Length: 343
Ligand SMILES: [Zn+2]
Ligand SMILES: [Zn+2]
Image (cartoon, rainbow, N blue to C red; front, side):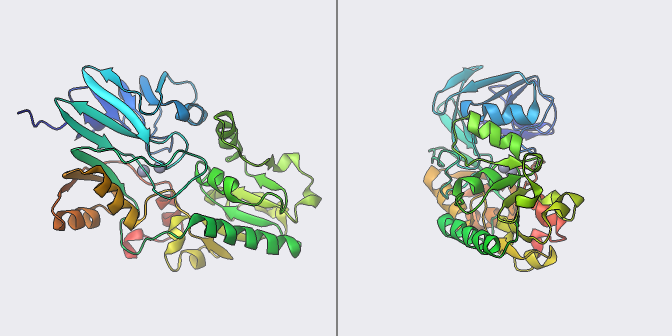
């Protein structure tokens, strides 16, 4: 019986030895299968890329001219005798779990994922496997997400109240994924929606992919006197920048899973914090692992030791891969002077 691993961690990234390809490599390689277009998973410089058809526009928006082959979800292809297919991960548009089958065994590398509903991408699909490779960005029992419809209701109420008092509403959020999810959830009848220049190219990629988003404008396309009822979406890096001065006396808020941590909002001196994450919460991670039926689980990034310990204590063969995946949201927490480990 051949029990050689189907995926190993190499200095370049996660590697499938029988298929001779990498998954989300962090150094330049010949052949890269990409789970999604966030910067720590989709890096420039690989000779060839393979990703889900739904990821094409966002991937090209972020990486420019790359040699990209796309395949539809569920449609297997053979790579050096290994059967490879992509399955929705529910994280951002085009996000995929990579299913690898060889010698009668199945491994799944899930990239980043969430189980909560998201109108901008297909829902997470549990894939049965022998070995499941998972993130653990919010892998602590304190992380439990509220119903996202309720969070959108809170955002709409905040925006509406600001509009009624003649103040613009500045909402900081990650430019790819989170911004589009917010756009899909807000009530665009409250006022106009203005987006930072880092956000609009991704909006275009979503629209080109068939995702319905409300109309958005760049600041340059608006009358500055007419922004008092506006919702403004900007990346967290814009906080404290001169770009914001044009909005006058505005209210500001931040939408992120890290808003679950007491103190994050206060440290950033924000009026409001909305807990909205594109990653699985603690119950979501456990539910996802359980649904795969996997006996072996390998954790790649986030709260690695916590999840490994919990899974081991519950009878699974759990271990970790050393990876260079960061987290699009962790960067925000670090910028706020907050280490997730201190929670
Ligand atoms: Zn991601
Ligand atoms: Zn990640």
